[in-house]
Length: 317
Image (cartoon, rainbow, N blue to C red):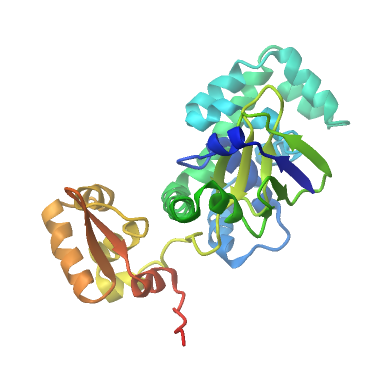
């Protein structure tokens, strides 16, 4: 069990990342690819990756061997995007990379041949870029929409109950008692944030929490998004036949709440076309439209959410 101790200053400085971290997603997607049993939500992704990935490609094997050193593969700079993270990896000194490989214990000789020498950090960055292009990038829309839905959930927790509600909402993978966050971990450890706060980073591919808590790095807790928010993408043609492709796209893109212009950009059509479709969807009880100042926001009703996700709402009473 990992116990993270908060002060008042830590609570004030706790934040939620706006997006998933691309290098953490590569690392965790590699774990899902190696799972013996794949949950239904990941089966379509696994099948798509296996059709694309050369079975002789050594990159997934290398990722697996380096996975026990997530601090090496996920520099803090990757919070600013894939290119920033890869640039930080390239800037890693060959001496530090060699020391990290030694700390991992006995590794196959080919790993040292690939990553040894002055070009080792650049080679590692190229490997992670390649894996991102295969494991994550083709599924970027699904990841983005799912993480956006989770972020909206965290925002509601924060508005309704403050930071305490935000941290309590991390169940079932973590428990909050008002001053200590207990996080599921194979290691028994206590960590004091010492006024630095905690950055909560959602992950689509993670199924258990991950951390980066070194004294010289911003504290990070990578948390799995809720299963209710983990979208797999619509079954090909299923909603198209029911709604038509444009209305289906409007409905799916409205899961996290979006304005008319934003929906038009996501769907690839005009704002006038989106307005017609949102009117039909609203009349069918699948979409609600609210105004926030001068901005119009479209979001799904419970019925609309059930249609998109395939989950039937349970009647109360």
